[in-house]
Image (cartoon, rainbow, N blue to C red):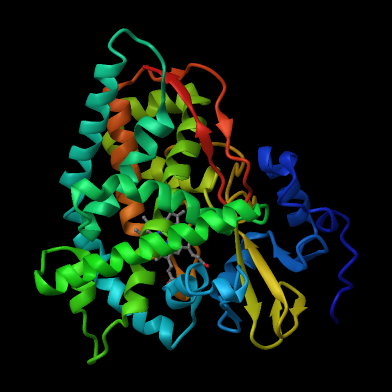
Length: 406
Ligand code: HEM
């Protein structure tokens, strides 16, 4: 039997726009999980899967699709909507399988492992800059000085964006990513549209150039890519490059920021990491991903009637996987609300699951582990120098300002 949608008190007032929820969603997640099955949210007009087993089932179930839904009026579709529709994130098999196959090789673990020395070097360059600017011991913002520039430098390097153009990427990415939130203004939508147009034109021009003069970079490989005789269309190429920057960048910034706030709030864990960095850097990175996950909600639409955790999601209805809640589920994680840099096993779902499992996960993992190890090696006495400021968004969970001294 399909349970009534209204039996659960809490989901009715689950509002991702609420500042209280953004500040601390974890007590609400615990209440949602206590319902023992997905619950209906009037506010969002969709089911919410808060338990680990339900959220995991949502991202894996083939009857639930990441179906393209225009987020701007169709007369603006040439920009933002089109970028979404043409990318891996906006489609399902068979198109998804083809696009994903073309990306898969570039992001295979072996290729990413080869980037290690380069990522390490980028960390040293950024930290050298911080050391020089704060020689007299004054505080600095860990987000703008380190967490933000690092992922954009890494992805720009991988894609082959020329040094002279890299300053353009961060503002484009910041404008585009606002479209993932439920709370956004017409001005933000216009900015996303403008960023999509500018970034799209930029990638088109660069792709044309790389076709004429190939380099050893990802844009050249995508331009040349052939899989069973199948090339990316120009629109798919542009959308793929944009989504790589956009999907990867904000999540990486927020994950490092969230993880560092957790680490600095737990000095005993910071000491453990400093004493045994080789052993603990990788498990600390996984705990950063689990403990305060940077992406909290992913939607799916039922392509047929689908049962998840005891409720039937009717064809055309939406259901969201609450990944940050799944990652605190005490049914799966011992001491789920404790931050433990040595946690093993740690089967978190911060990267999703199933066919849309994060293609950038190997890169994000390597980047996070090197970043935290480099930071701790250089500034072992790192500590708060003021109160961090949260980004006012629920889906993308992060800090915009994190003052520290070294
Ligand atoms: C801490 C960092 C990151 C987190 C937590 C994260 C998380 C996720 C999640 C949860 C999904 C699945 C979305 C869904 O199921 O609907 C996803 C997909 C994706 N991610 Fe990441 N991501 C991170 C970093 C990156 C990076 C560095 C890149 C690329 C450079 C990247 C590229 C992508 C792409 C292209 C997809 C779509 C895959 C598909 O639909 O097949 N991500 N990511």
